Image (tube, rainbow, N blue to C red; front, top):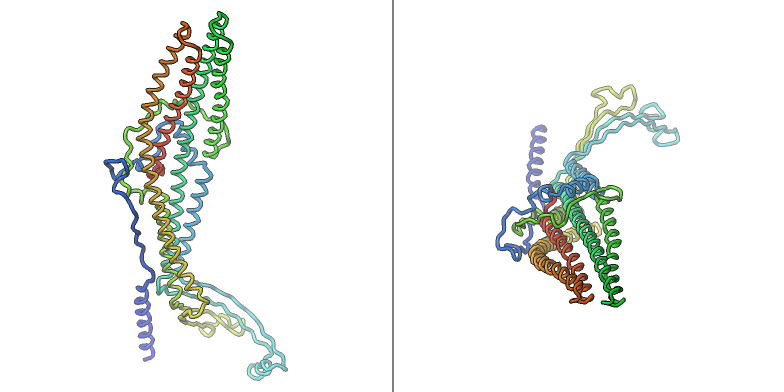
Amino acid sequence: MTAFKNKYFYLLLSGLLLGLSACRVGRNYERPSVPLPAQFTGVTTGDTLSIAETGWKQFFTDPVLQALIDSALKGNYGLQTALSRIDASGQQVKQAKAAFLPRVSAQIGANTSVYRENSLNGISYNAFLGADHIEDYSVDVNLSWEADVWGRIRRQKEAALDHYLQSYEAARLVQTTLVADVAQGYYNLLMLDAQLTIARQNVALGDSILQITRLQKTAGDVTELAVEQADVQKQAAALLIPQLEQGIQIQENALRILTGALPGPISRDADINAIPLPDHLDAGLPATLLSKRPDVRSAELELMAANAQVGSAQANMYPMLNITAGGGLDAFKASNWFNIPNSLFGLVGGTILQPILQGRQLKTQFEVAKITREQAVIAFRQSVLNAVGEVSNALVANTKLKEQEQIADYRLHTLRHAIDHAQLLYKSGVANYLEVITAQGNLLQSQLDFANIKRQQLSAVVELYRSVGGGTK
């Protein structure tokens, strides 16, 4: 009869645990509504597949740039730090999974208690045991297990897993930013190379004009002022040379540091005007940013973790069921320690703990968790808005810079003819030195501007690639 009652009790307890286990507190995650346009501004067609699907080796075809990016992905310390955070978060996930398992501890103990005749314990032990001391030797194993009735442990596991995935997205964000930074730095270096060549060519041109002006002064056709003006124009171009050389060395050092190497020169022979621009750049649909952009994914995972923490905080306010068990060997004498089964002992117990008055700590934790979740919702929506804005800006930049390039190219073509005509007219005495100097100054500035526009075009392509989530493959 007793065995039947015990069996009935355990069946009832098991059924109760299974029933309560379905009562997980907290709501499951649902993505909040975010404002997304059907297509990006100024784009009439869009594909679900964007340039984000293109690996960086296929997107950046310059061999020197490819080598720089590859070195940065291997040697950049910021990326290495981000990758180490993934490992740390992985350990947290393992710990969260282990929370489902019971806690087990083992203990071995031996002690002797000596009592004198004047103490009550001494009189008792002498009367019943005929000894003035008692020995106790034990070895036992204890087990404690929390029944996850309200899903507290499961919510904590969810939060740990979300944070792990967030660390992965953080590493992807570092990588895509790193790829873009290296490409931007490389294109800026090529622009400085081009501008340095332009400055040197203008110094040579200015020197030629200066020589002509001196000959005309000797012939009495112009004054010393014309010679001085020609010399000043030449020095204006010459001043650019050390400035550009300084910028080149600083940019080289910055790129080397991005790759994890010491500052130094970078071997290259590419011409910024020879680097082709993609004919078609498809940014995809705005909805794809939710899965492609690492920072957007990171913000959503933070929201998911915050949602799980709300459930965990709520579960803390409900009863907690702990089941404990233990067993081992216990004897009053060392010689009887392993006298089995006489030295065996065991115990089983269960407790239900219901917090009542905790100084409002649990309630405060729950309310703060809900507020944190709402903050995460705001941050997620803001990240989506920023992503759409960055892609839209990059698309506009690519379109308008093409128009600027066409205008700048036509202007540069016109000024090259103008400087040739000005020199011929100046030699013939039809044009004065001011017209020649003005034409030369305009040509120099236009050449520098055209190189800068080419760099801006390449930078806009890189920015679009980064903003849609490219650079992680």
